[in-house]
Amino acid sequence: VEETYIMVKPDGVQRGLVGEIISRFEKKGFLLKGLKLFQCPKELAEEHYRDLKDKSFYPKLINYITSGPVVCMAWAGVGVVASARKLIGATNPLQAEPGTIRGDLAVQTGRNVVHGSDSPENGHREVVGSGRERQENRQWKGRIRKSTKKKKDSESI
Ligand code: GTP
Ligand code: MG
Image 1 (cartoon, rainbow, N blue to C red):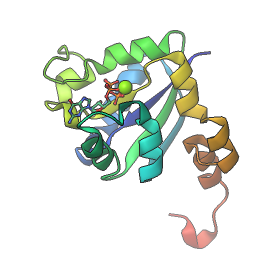
Image 2 (image 1 turned 45 degrees about the vertical axis):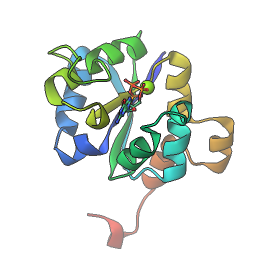
Image 3 (image 1 turned 90 degrees about the vertical axis):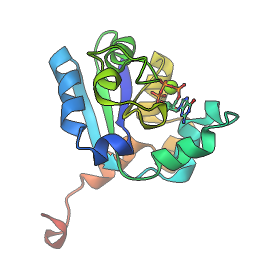
C-alpha cells in the first residue's frame, strides 16, 4: 500500500503542533506506520532537499530544518501521498486554503510547519531510504528500529 513521509518541521515541534498535525491524518483515516523525534543532521537535510540546492533560499532552508528536532512519520493508505498534500495545503501558508494544516497554522513559507512527500516514488524513498542510505543504516526507519531496542534500566524513563 502507498506510503508517504510526513515531517513536522522544527517550528511545528517548538510551537506544540505535533498532536494537532497527527490528529488531522488520524481523523482522515490514514494509518500511522512509524514515528520518531529526530535531530536531522545537515547531510541528511541536504539529501532530503537536494532538488532545491540551486535556490536562493536553500541555505536558509537547511538551517531551518536542522534548527531543532523534527517529528518523522510514515503514513499509509490508498492515495495517501496526494491526499496528504491536500491536507497540508499550499507551500506558502498565506495561499493555503483555510482548513488545511498550513492554511490554519502558519503564515510564512520559510516556517510552514510540515513536509509531505510529493510523489509515491519519493514517499517510498523518504520512508525507507535509498540503497546507499540503507547500507549506511542512516534512514530514519533504521534509526527507529535501533532506538526501540531494549534499553538498560538506567536509560529508561
Ligand atoms: P515540502 O513538503 O517541505 O517539500 O514543501 P513543498 O513541497 O510544499 O515545497 P517545495 O518542495 O517546493 O519546498 C520545500 C520547502 O522549502 C518549503 O516547504 C519551504 O519550507 C521552503 N521554501 C520553498 N520556497 C521557499 C521560498 O521562496 N522561501 C523560503 N524561505 N523557503 C522556501
Ligand atoms: Mg516538496
